[in-house]
Picture 1 (spheres, rainbow, N blue to C red):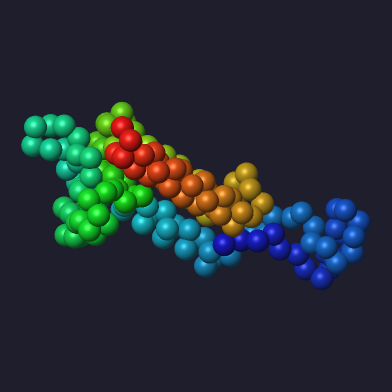
Picture 2 (picture 1 turned 180 degrees about the vertical axis):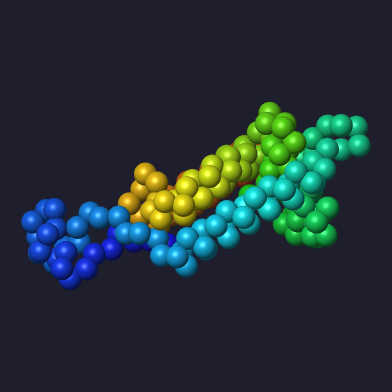
Length: 172
């Protein structure tokens, strides 16, 4: 990804007056990075096209709770098979597919963190393409801290949801 860059000639011009510290200047995305960002955006589009292709509904028309990923030839969840309990990511594929079918409420019911992740990734597509077109990220100086925060937040939410699900099964 893209850290804020600086050169030796910039060393004496740091905004805080400390020589040797990098100035707060956004670095341009290299051509290779721009191509990579476009490839990642295309991969996200493909992900959502697959989610739209999947059938997240039972035969009676009700949303599945989980298991939609088996339509891709993937095995059933080993955690569920071994323990009888859902794993932290159970329902993510179904949640994505329901959202792509326009069933936002069903998506939220199945896995609200999956819905949040899908919305985040959908937003990343135009954001990353705009950054690739401009040659600079929009609204952020560097990408890494923002992505790290997003991963930590989504992982924390997924684990919190899982604890709530397990608690509801055991005590409610």
